[in-house]
Structures are given as structure tokens and as C-alpha cells.
Image (cartoon, rainbow, N blue to C red; front, side):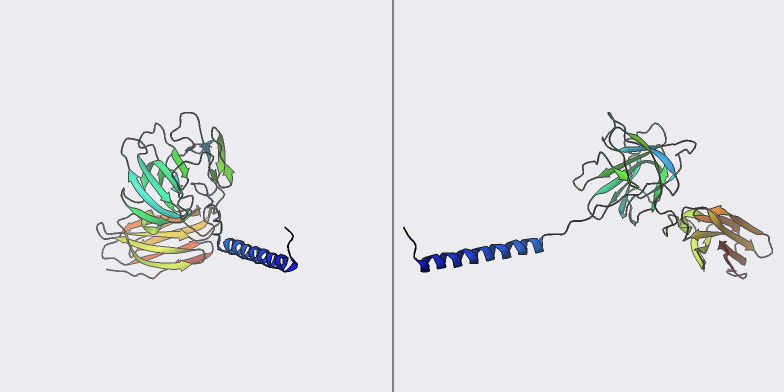
Length: 298
């Protein structure tokens, strides 16, 4: 049937209106679509300048895709500080002489997680948790659980729980079945020091005083149970790189003891028995130094 001009114009107007509605709907859908979230990047679990083998061995490794960090060259891995490869919330656990042994799970902001197993020591007790940043110390390398030699068992897991079989650390991807020597280059000279005064002096020491120096802070601690003072200088610049740093402690009427050298993270701990005695304390980072008067005599 032949259409009249008026009928054709109505059809054209309806078609144009439908196209406009479709275009608006598409535009709205695009505008309200969630933005893609950038993937979390992971540093090496070791301090700046450390190089260890990342062994993603297969077959037979459980779970497949997990990395065994092992000694490289003359640098033995046993006792090395283990650092969080990305920020999140750390959960500490201990399975005794089986499986992971002492281990830590860090849940990251996007729901992914990393696991660090067979640790010799942990910075918190099993069952505890703490917020961590990239580079925060979690513990030290050991051989607990079902391990036969010191190494760090490390996993990167997706938010659904499955293991990433080709994890990337410090920009280096370690495919399944490969062993690659990975040098830690992250946070070299950064501002995040993985050590705290309480960790260096010991958990029984309480903070008494501190003083800022350019590039760090000097801390005075005291253990009321033993009567010992402790001084440590914690760096805030050139983290992970050896540079001049010192800490000293002097009990009034006695001699001064100083720890001075080229250190990557801190100087000290310097400890002296000083119940009911005045102490002079201080330290330095580079050319910036602090020396107290005799004080804290109680």
C-alpha cells in the first residue's frame, strides 16, 4: 500500500524520537558505568637491595603458582625480615609443626590477598591483626610447619581465592615453572621504615622521650621490670640504603656507649642499667645530631 506524505512524516518523527531515546539511554549507561580499578602492585617482600631466588616450581608445589623465596649467591635467606608486598590488613596465624607453620595473610583493599608462610618469628601473636602499609615488617624467614629448609612461601591470591600462577613482584613476573633472581628495588631511599623503637629495643621497653634530627628521630626507652634504658635512632630518609647514623647512652657518673656506623635502617639499640639515675642520650643521622642534658632521673 502506498503511504501518504503525512503518514511518512509521522513515521519519520517516531523513528527520530526512538533513536534519541536510545542515544540518551546509551549515554546514561556509559556515564553510570563503574570506573575500572587499577590492579595493586606488589614490591619484593625483602629490604631494598636484597636479591633472592623466586622459585615458582612445578609440578608438585602446593598450591600451584606459589613462590618459594630462596637464598641467592652468598646471601642466606634465613632470618631475613619479611615485608608486606602491598598495604592492607594483616592476620597472624600459627599451625604449629604442620602446613604453613607460622604465617601471615594480608587482605588488600581490592579483596586480593598475599600469604607469607614458614616464618620463624611474627611481629604479632597468632590470632591478632594489624593494619600494614607496603613495606611493613611482618616477621622473619624461617622453616616452621611442613618446611624442610629455611625459605619464604609466598602467594598472591585473587579476590575469589584462587592463586595467581604467574605473580609479579617489583615489576618482575615469575611464570609457573620458572626460577628468577629478583632484586628488591622498591622503597629504596623511601620514607617508610619497617622498624619501630619498641621492636628494636624490645617489647618490654616503654617510650620515655624522643628528639627529631634531620633524617630521623632518636628515641629513649625504659624497661621498668629490669631498670634498663635503651636508645635507638630510627631513620626516615635513605631507608634501606646504608648511611651514617648513631645512637648513644650515658648514665651520670659512668661512661658513654655509642653505636655508630653506616646503617640501612637504624642505629642501636644501646642499653644501660640506670634505675634511679640520670641519663644523657642522643644520636645522629648524617650531620644532624641531638644530645640531651642529664635528665629522666627517676
